Image (cartoon, rainbow, N blue to C red; front, top):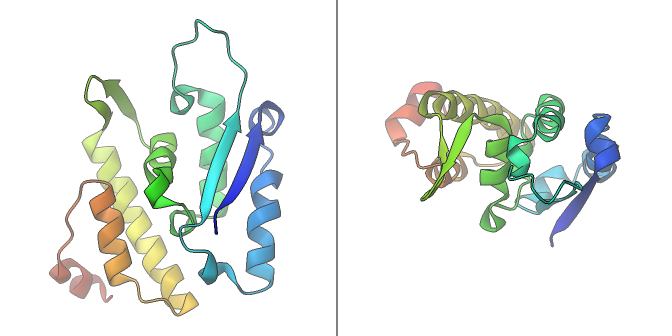
Length: 158
């Protein structure tokens, strides 16, 4: 089942996380958070001038809202609907990038730091939730164009 968090200009400009909290906090409270893997999407309604060529991930206020969300729920990628490109869109909100003819191009060093941070955060969080993580984390890395081998996971104890 997919759950969509609706974000409007008021929430974004005021850094109001309540639209996300209204969805995520009940899952935390009732202990069902682990049952909502890859269910979450964002719908962003931000009026812009017709001549504004920027993608949402290029608007500082939108990015800052997602930075704040990531600080509160650093394990959020577990909940994102990867098949609907929510992982890529979320990553674009947090990692410097450029758009070119072939699509989005992340700053390679920034993407690597982001990915390793998420691997460490998610592996610990998933372990607390009793979720087997190695294959899920390898798949997440692949979604971001990285290959992580089993030796890496052995090294960090997963």
